[in-house]
Image (cartoon, rainbow, N blue to C red; front, side):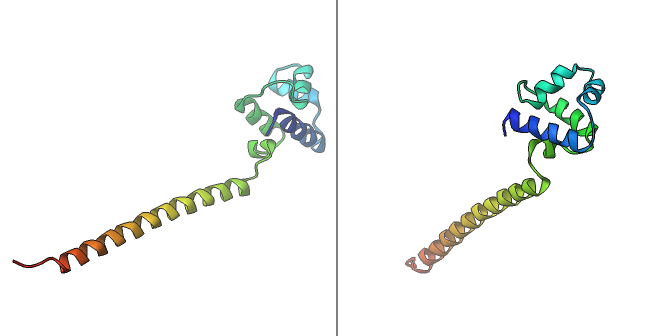
Length: 111
């Protein structure tokens, strides 16, 4: 996600909630011009600043970033599935090796 998209989201939510740039500037102790630059994606924004803006707009940083919690859950589930698939593959390989060892022991000539 780029700064302009984040800025657009901040602007849209701010307007939707009836909050002015001056309100945000006052809460953050920055100038209205600085808020405008954030909304236009012209300045880098720290995660701390995003968190402050999210609090002012009564939303989450995830929303400002355009990432919903369901997206994060999907990513976590996908990573878990991938991990389980790797574990399953390793288990299959170990079982195959065990079976090969058993066969070797069965066919081992006795002295």
